[in-house]
Length: 491
Image 1 (cartoon, rainbow, N blue to C red):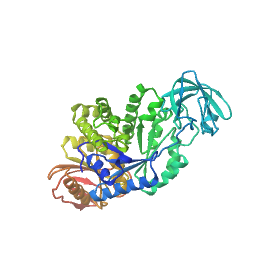
Image 2 (tube, rainbow, N blue to C red):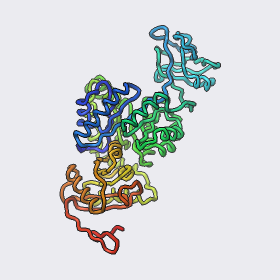
Image 3 (spheres, one colour):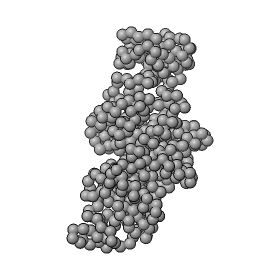
Image 4 (cartoon, rainbow, N blue to C red):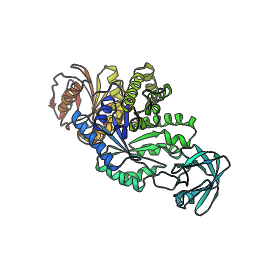
């Protein structure tokens, strides 16, 4: 199941891919991680989906990542007394706390915290920004908005309040229920929606209290302003361009995307690019040329993973969408200019032993034309540091922690394998060589670069680098408390 690419693919499960047979087809076609979207579906449906993934994992003896995506707080209007209303520029629509069906003059808005926060000239967006207005008057239980861009508005449409830090929790009561289920089901990643500030991440991590990875979704402009702090506190991030594109001008989205990818690579955190990547494939068997270019741009920019949403959840061609995304990624990564771009955008390493070892491993692998870099890791930190360097060879991530192996499925260039803990240097070398051969990542006598942290089995710094020949017997001996091999010494 070795992929011929470094950038990973996330596929969203839904009605179009609800069966074990289709989940297996998606994985065989190239999906590395599966997303459970808690904005839709029941707990029972998500349980069945995750159970099918774990059964497939057992069948193929391959770790498969699962991302549980929480809905987050969604601001919505209530219902109308008709199918829809038409709003024109200059119309005034009152949003109030009444539960009565709305009309062209008013509609329910069951969010008292937003109404109490509202001020004159506050921008209000309806239906993903298709209709726009500004607050002209507020009261205890209402706010009046004057429409600047009109259109058809129907019941229960979403509302966005851009450029404002709203006093609402990023984790709702529904999210708490979904979060408890996700942790109980042993999801590998939990995506948090509607992140506005670093405190949202801190609070969520306290609630989760688990080794599951926390992924922060950048959907709000206010989060962009504090992106360094949010990235530092998160285990990974997602550029959710759909919601982000509602609240910022469209010309800003690609710039913000590149900015966030660069910041994540510098921090050594995985970054996912999401929303409408191959959107036309919801109904068509092939993407548009613009969509293919969009996926390619994310790969050139250095994203760890690209995500399919409706394409695989409700689309007519879910398997084809994964296959085409796989083809686009592989073609881009073969382009000579791709490697030049990756190298030019190389972040400066921190002055730590771990970074020094990881930088050296990438350089040694390139200089010696090694087949693979093997990392031994407990928490995934060693493998992520290796990926941060974007080496020219694949990274074989070996871990005794099954959850870590699954989480690494989302990290650039890492082919993760769940294996038993190593006990010694000879054991480390033997296991690395044997697995590299078994996984077709190397042939006998190829060079193998190994990085690890000592003592084995503990999370901590990467402090060992080894160069060995695959399949060649190694002779080790202890001399005055020092392990000696081929003239190289390690205490």
